[in-house]
Image 1 (tube, rainbow, N blue to C red):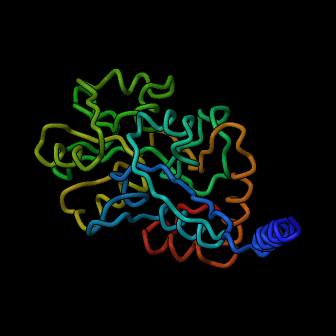
Image 2: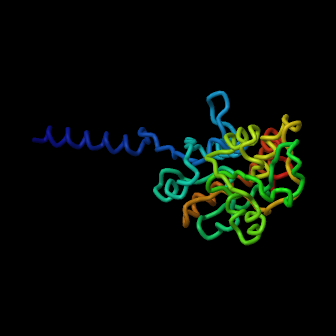
Image 3: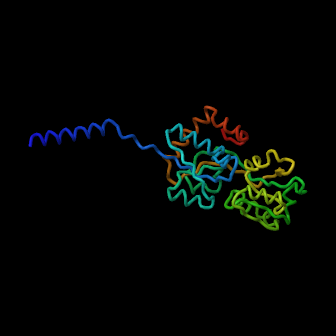
Length: 257
């Protein structure tokens, strides 16, 4: 009987020591970022890999916190469901804060953005007045669509012959090139990226629909994760990491210091 209790005591001591020694590694947090994979230069696919300004920022935030990064492409019109269900931790991909301030827990704004109109260079369209009777494309559930549906742009939108929605802007540009649509309403950062190198084909009108800002959107009330991400981003802004990535993606003029 004594031998039994001695053996039991020894076993319990081994278990306790193992638990205290930390032999079982702590679980690493997975930082799951939801994004639109057809929204360059913020998030897109290049050579079979996810690329983009926002995705590189998210990768760096995860690395500095010792987190595992999980980049999750989402349907943009299902973004709220993905966030509310816990499938993603945040929406980080050219996500407009304006008009959504109370729907999410936001980071500080980090990109200045405007909604603009892109047309073919040979279209004869040079001002918003020239869009009367034209077919204008927007991305589904985009900021451009929201702008055109707002009171500020009601008269302009009413002058269009038709407004067509597309799942992503790559298709919209193919339709613009083919002449199926006359113009595209979109974010200026995306417009600059799409037009770069094709200035002989497309032009961005000087007028803007609305000015706005991008932020990182977290589930309403998730201030703990927001605060950690914000603190890390602020450090990246201070040490020049954000500026270097912005230059890489042609967004230096858009970054909010």
